[in-house]
Structures are given as structure tokens and as C-alpha cells.
Image 1 (spheres, protein in one colour):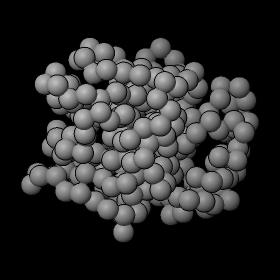
Image 2 (spheres, protein in one colour):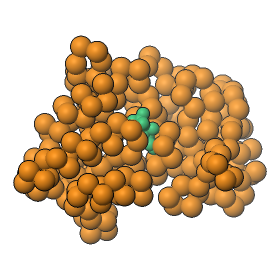
Image 3 (cartoon, protein in one colour):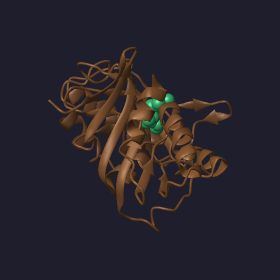
Length: 226
Ligand SMILES: O=C(CO)[C@H](O)[C@H](O)COP(=O)(O)O
């Protein structure tokens, strides 16, 4: 299904495009298909949203530029952990949310590619990744807990781990995964998380996706915001 979504997204890529390239297993299927088109003559310049995506692109011959070299992009194609009917997203399961958000915001359009399992009524079942500065971690955690309680949210904040200690993002930050279960007012949470100084970014992407391509057993469908 990930491949079906990636194939459908590839139809939106045009010759000469400046392309933001997402992170995760669905985005990687897109990179593989894109690389085949590139070897067939399609000219694109890609800006990767993570070191992991950059490595795959380089391995497969997809030409890359940095965002500083190409600060304005035509299109970003990326996966998501959750998509609701208003095309609000939870992202960051792969830990790349900060670069993903910067790249998506530099793009004229963002297309989300996902399988049906990612479509939800209300965001929050997937733990919300919150990228934080390592300095003052305990203070930032308390501030997030207080904010959550003010908004009527509860649930653990778990420091993301890797095999050799705390997980560190490409930008050298940490991730607190917030197990809220349900986020009825994603806009309020998004705005108020941004006002906590130790929060670098969060995985709520609101008003960013132009549309989503959702793949199920019967094929891929386009999902517009309701
Ligand atoms: O936000 C992301 C990475 O930070 C990914 O897009 C998200 O986790 C979806 O990944 P996958 O396609 O593997 O399910």
C-alpha cells in the first residue's frame, strides 16, 4: 500500500521541480520510485528532510541540494503517522519532524502519502512527538505537563530511546513522546506548545498538507480537507 501511495504521488512530480523529500518507510518507497524516473531522465533537485533520507537518495542517485541552496521548493512529498479529516497531521515517528516541518513550510505544496491505517477521526492515538532542547529537559517536561493539564489532556511523556541511550535528532535534540490518546483541540495544543521555550518543535502539522494520497487494498485515493 505504501508503494501504491508513492506511485500516485510520483504522478505529481514534474521535470525541473525542486522537491522536498520526506522521511520514513513510505517516503523511502517514493525515493526508490523517484530514483528510477531520475535514471530514466527526469530532472529534479531534492532537499532531504533527514540524514537517513539523504543517504538513501545518494545511494540511489537522486540529486540533492541543501535547503540553503534551494530555500523555496515546488513540492514536498512526505509520510505521516496520523491524518484526520481536516488534513491535520501527527508526524515525527521517525524523529525527523523539525526538518520535515521546515522543508514542508518552504514548499508551495505538500502531498502526504500514507496507508489507510493512518487515517483517524481524532488525532492523538499515535504518541505526539515533541522535540526538545536537552538543556532544561526537566523544566520543559513540567511545562508541557502543565499545559496538557490546562487543555484537559493527560498521559505519559516518555523520553524516546535508541539502542545506545536517548534518541537524538539530526539537529541534536531529544524527543518526548506524549501519550495523550486523544487531542480534541490540536490547534490550541500546537500554538501553546510553541510558546514553551525548551520546545524546539512538535509533530502537529496543521494547514500544511495540500492533500493526502491514501492507499488501501483497492488502490490509492486522494483525500482533501473537509
Ligand atoms: O514523520 C515521519 C518521520 O519523522 C514519517 O513520515 C512518519 O513517521 C511516517 O512514517 P512511515 O511512512 O514509516 O509510517
